[in-house]
Image (cartoon, rainbow, N blue to C red; front, side):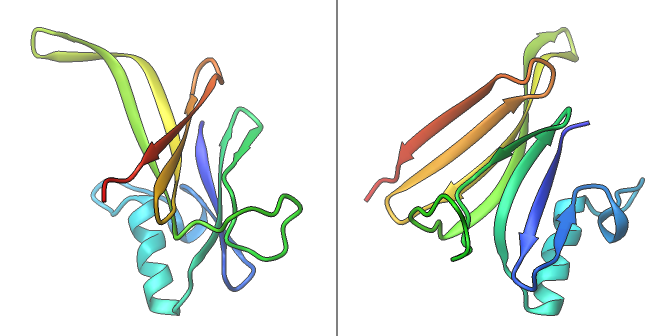
Length: 129
């Protein structure tokens, strides 16, 4: 199953649907649990990667200690989306994607990974003034 892994400012990691971030029926999502954990412990996200079938897809990090130094994003978060057909009242997803997003002052980088084929796509979107 595709999932996100987040590096935190205290040096620990959070993994989607594991440990204190485990999802359950009628419970908040892993991401909402992570956001609550960040707020309660005054932590920030310093890195975000997507893991699909053992492959790791990384976004630029907020950490100073990183082998591929780059401009630091202002914010990191993730999304999921499905692409498919609406047949009557039933949605049939043909493709499912997990995405990692990095926001900068003037642009946004979106990394999308197809959860079945492992194809990955990068979008760079300029922000409007």
